Length: 555
Ligand code: F6P
Image (cartoon, rainbow, N blue to C red; front, side, top):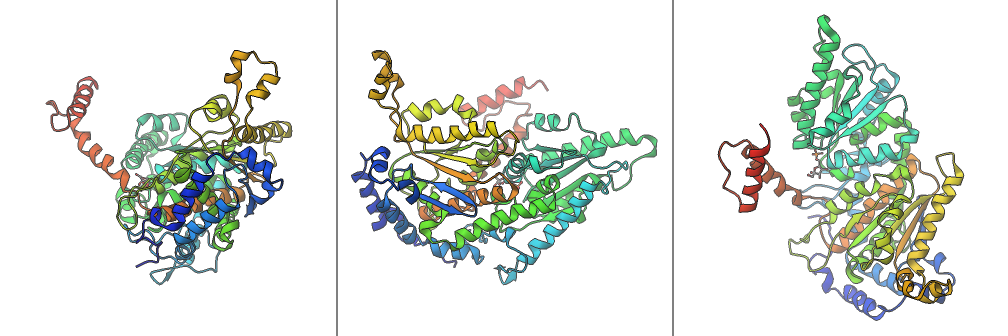
């Protein structure tokens, strides 16, 4: 039995939880303005640093006592023991009897982490070396397609964790990428995703990476089959009478999966398969072989930098005292806001256009991990778990949904993410960008009183419209520059934040049974869409929807 949290006692029945609840009640009226007025060193006291990231959480409704109580809650939940257990390869994913070892994916060569007595670090490095050798061949042009042309286009086919990480990382690191190559990503079973991704590509110059942990996912397998048909049709046309070599598919398809049997059944040579392991969850896999498209884009050396960044944050999480531990603080602030202040969502707002898909990536990481209603002990939780995660890059979001963040009726805590040094080579733009981060956090925290509005000479009837309550919490996370290394630290920060929260909420952050029912029902409905007779087996709404589609689909 793995060492887990104190799961016998529901977390909300512990003295630590109750102490936080009464602390929250007692301090309900306390404002951020008052907290700042009381302590001139507040920013310094509530700023933490680790792995090159600086996190200012002073604009939260916390004081030293709040943090002390939150840390006591983490201790009660057994956080330290759970961190140690994860790094030791214990099977914390109890519903699937699996270790949770994404940290092994970035463990340096020579270190050792064992699962069932087997050291997994050498295996990780063997795969990384194969990925590097393959990437070098493709990037240098020595890997040729079936008609002898070099590969210029890489299309990653995958969904969920086999897509969101690769897309996010490609966009984040495009500055460091090989610009003479095109990278595309196909995920949706909606055929338009595939059609649009390949419409201007030459099949003879295109490599598909079929990325799927299970290699059974409906969307990915459908897209992979369509890709093979598209490829072979295009290659045959190009080859004309000379015909295609027998290894045509193998030269244009590689697979990333844990399922060698299904990869072979699809027709991909397992020599061109890059493996990973059941102890890597899909949403924790962007730094495994699932990152092959990332490595092809930025090259093996920069991919190594990315892994170093992940590892730096892993080490910080593993060794820093809880009170100065970034993922722990972040996770506990989330618990504080979710469970004691009652804020149901979190906006993640990167002020960096390269991080345009970061919030989407986090939606899976956080919500698939901690969107659970059952404890490790199999009991229904009596407390809220994962908030809704959403967001868009700034400053664009400011001109869309920030109205609600500033003056809406619900409080939306915000994570602002920004970097000191720009990549664009346009420093003036960067100052404007970063000034907006600071301004937004300041406006949210301190608002603008009626008296201030009046003092500006605003007409009396407009004063209530122009007043800002303020007192709205946010965190500002700053890195030096967006690089492969800092991206690694940022992703690992959120991974471990999720771990911290899952531990406090006493849930299994590493399974995802909640996605199954819809998949099963879709499988039943697929043949019904082509049924000759009206479908009557479902509820009246579902029957009517299916039957409307049957009769209107035009086939
Ligand atoms: O349906 C959810 C899910 O299982 C995710 O957890 C996973 O990242 C995604 O589907 C894709 O799965 P696979 O990599 O096995 O195709």
